[in-house]
Length: 71
Image (cartoon, rainbow, N blue to C red; front, side, top):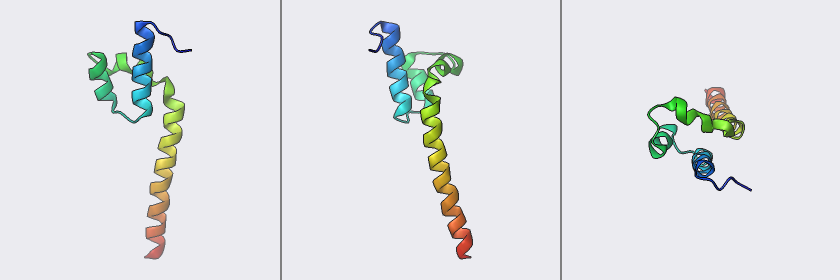
């Protein structure tokens, strides 16, 4: 069960925004952090986001390879 404390809710808020692809700068502003180092602690979802990023760049590279092969 998620932590229902204010701190826990802030973590859940930031984590879910990251999962939905919200820009880190936007999350930083919503949480009232002065710099990214404070917001960066919420990036414990990095493994999931990294897989998603890998899938996206893989698609870009495959499309570029197909374009190159056609020339």
